[in-house]
Length: 140
Ligand SMILES: [Zn+2]
Image 1 (cartoon, rainbow, N blue to C red):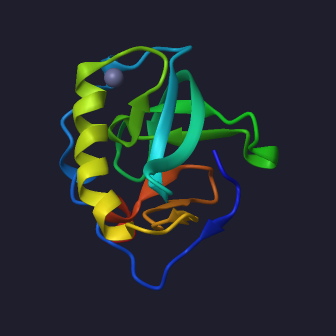
Image 2 (tube, rainbow, N blue to C red; image 1 turned 60 degrees about the vertical axis):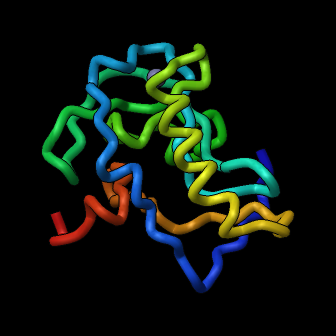
Image 3 (cartoon, rainbow, N blue to C red; image 1 turned 120 degrees about the horizontal axis):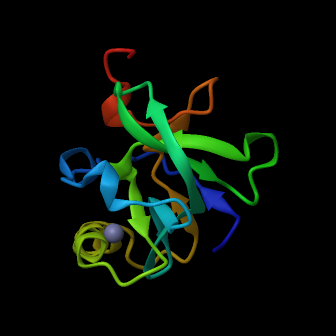
Protein backbone atom coordinates (compact mmCIF):
# COMPACT_ATOMS: atom_id res chain seq x y z
CA UNK A 1 0.00 0.00 0.00
CA UNK A 2 1.29 3.50 -0.80
CA UNK A 3 2.86 5.68 1.86
CA UNK A 4 2.17 9.13 0.44
CA UNK A 5 -1.13 10.33 1.73
CA UNK A 6 -2.97 13.40 0.60
CA UNK A 7 -5.55 14.70 3.02
CA UNK A 8 -8.21 16.58 1.09
CA UNK A 9 -9.95 19.67 2.44
CA UNK A 10 -13.21 17.86 1.82
CA UNK A 11 -13.74 14.79 3.96
CA UNK A 12 -16.57 12.53 2.81
CA UNK A 13 -18.51 11.13 5.69
CA UNK A 14 -18.06 7.45 6.43
CA UNK A 15 -21.67 6.30 6.39
CA UNK A 16 -21.03 2.57 6.74
CA UNK A 17 -18.56 2.00 9.55
CA UNK A 18 -20.60 3.55 12.40
CA UNK A 19 -23.60 1.32 11.63
CA UNK A 20 -21.67 -1.83 10.85
CA UNK A 21 -23.02 -4.84 12.72
CA UNK A 22 -20.06 -7.08 13.53
CA UNK A 23 -19.38 -8.94 16.76
CA UNK A 24 -16.21 -8.90 18.80
CA UNK A 25 -15.99 -12.69 18.39
CA UNK A 26 -15.86 -12.30 14.62
CA UNK A 27 -12.11 -11.72 15.01
CA UNK A 28 -9.45 -13.93 16.58
CA UNK A 29 -5.83 -13.48 17.60
CA UNK A 30 -3.62 -13.95 14.54
CA UNK A 31 -6.14 -12.60 12.04
CA UNK A 32 -4.78 -10.16 9.49
CA UNK A 33 -7.03 -7.14 9.14
CA UNK A 34 -7.15 -3.73 7.51
CA UNK A 35 -8.74 -0.48 8.67
CA UNK A 36 -10.18 1.35 5.67
CA UNK A 37 -9.01 4.97 5.72
CA UNK A 38 -9.53 6.23 2.20
CA UNK A 39 -8.73 5.40 -1.41
CA UNK A 40 -5.63 4.89 -3.53
CA UNK A 41 -6.25 5.01 -7.26
CA UNK A 42 -9.03 2.58 -7.98
CA UNK A 43 -8.98 0.72 -4.66
CA UNK A 44 -9.93 1.48 -1.12
CA UNK A 45 -6.88 2.15 1.04
CA UNK A 46 -6.08 1.52 4.66
CA UNK A 47 -3.58 0.31 7.22
CA UNK A 48 -2.95 -3.39 7.82
CA UNK A 49 -2.61 -4.92 11.27
CA UNK A 50 -2.45 -8.28 13.00
CA UNK A 51 -5.02 -8.99 15.72
CA UNK A 52 -3.21 -9.76 18.99
CA UNK A 53 -5.52 -10.00 21.97
CA UNK A 54 -8.82 -8.69 23.37
CA UNK A 55 -8.50 -5.18 24.76
CA UNK A 56 -10.97 -2.68 26.13
CA UNK A 57 -11.79 0.11 23.66
CA UNK A 58 -12.17 3.08 25.96
CA UNK A 59 -13.58 5.59 23.40
CA UNK A 60 -16.71 3.41 22.99
CA UNK A 61 -16.62 1.58 26.34
CA UNK A 62 -16.93 -1.68 24.45
CA UNK A 63 -14.79 -4.76 23.80
CA UNK A 64 -12.07 -4.10 21.27
CA UNK A 65 -8.94 -5.74 19.93
CA UNK A 66 -5.31 -4.94 20.38
CA UNK A 67 -3.62 -4.73 16.99
CA UNK A 68 0.01 -5.10 16.00
CA UNK A 69 1.33 -2.66 13.42
CA UNK A 70 4.62 -3.85 11.91
CA UNK A 71 5.32 -0.28 10.74
CA UNK A 72 3.98 1.44 13.82
CA UNK A 73 7.24 2.61 15.39
CA UNK A 74 6.46 3.76 18.93
CA UNK A 75 2.83 2.97 18.23
CA UNK A 76 3.34 -0.68 17.41
CA UNK A 77 0.29 -1.68 19.42
CA UNK A 78 -3.04 0.09 19.16
CA UNK A 79 -6.57 -0.79 20.25
CA UNK A 80 -9.51 -0.68 17.84
CA UNK A 81 -13.23 -1.39 17.83
CA UNK A 82 -14.25 -4.54 15.88
CA UNK A 83 -16.38 -2.54 13.45
CA UNK A 84 -13.25 -0.76 12.18
CA UNK A 85 -11.67 -4.03 11.05
CA UNK A 86 -11.85 -5.96 7.77
CA UNK A 87 -10.41 -9.44 7.36
CA UNK A 88 -7.49 -9.84 4.98
CA UNK A 89 -6.54 -13.35 5.99
CA UNK A 90 -9.60 -15.25 4.84
CA UNK A 91 -12.45 -14.86 2.45
CA UNK A 92 -15.06 -13.54 4.76
CA UNK A 93 -18.57 -12.71 3.45
CA UNK A 94 -19.34 -10.29 6.27
CA UNK A 95 -16.20 -8.29 5.69
CA UNK A 96 -16.52 -8.44 1.90
CA UNK A 97 -20.01 -6.94 2.01
CA UNK A 98 -18.66 -4.01 4.04
CA UNK A 99 -15.64 -3.65 1.76
CA UNK A 100 -17.80 -3.59 -1.37
CA UNK A 101 -20.12 -1.01 0.17
CA UNK A 102 -17.14 1.21 0.97
CA UNK A 103 -15.78 0.78 -2.55
CA UNK A 104 -19.10 1.60 -4.21
CA UNK A 105 -19.48 4.68 -2.04
CA UNK A 106 -15.94 6.04 -2.06
CA UNK A 107 -14.40 5.24 -5.42
CA UNK A 108 -16.77 7.39 -7.52
CA UNK A 109 -16.03 10.37 -5.27
CA UNK A 110 -12.33 10.18 -6.10
CA UNK A 111 -12.52 9.05 -9.71
CA UNK A 112 -9.45 10.10 -11.62
CA UNK A 113 -7.20 10.55 -8.61
CA UNK A 114 -4.07 8.41 -8.47
CA UNK A 115 -2.93 9.57 -5.06
CA UNK A 116 -3.49 7.77 -1.81
CA UNK A 117 -6.11 9.77 0.04
CA UNK A 118 -6.69 9.56 3.77
CA UNK A 119 -10.25 10.69 4.44
CA UNK A 120 -9.34 11.60 8.01
CA UNK A 121 -11.95 9.46 9.78
CA UNK A 122 -9.58 7.99 12.34
CA UNK A 123 -7.31 9.36 14.99
CA UNK A 124 -5.24 7.89 17.81
CA UNK A 125 -5.68 8.90 21.41
CA UNK A 126 -2.75 9.44 23.78
CA UNK A 127 -3.32 5.89 24.99
CA UNK A 128 -3.05 4.51 21.44
CA UNK A 129 -6.74 3.89 21.08
CA UNK A 130 -7.87 4.15 17.48
CA UNK A 131 -11.07 6.15 17.36
CA UNK A 132 -13.43 6.83 14.48
CA UNK A 133 -14.63 10.41 14.18
CA UNK A 134 -18.19 9.19 14.79
CA UNK A 135 -17.17 7.59 18.10
CA UNK A 136 -15.11 10.58 19.16
CA UNK A 137 -18.12 12.88 19.30
CA UNK A 138 -19.01 14.01 22.74
CA UNK A 139 -15.34 13.73 23.79
CA UNK A 140 -15.72 10.22 25.14
ZN1 LIG B 1 -14.54 -10.96 8.60
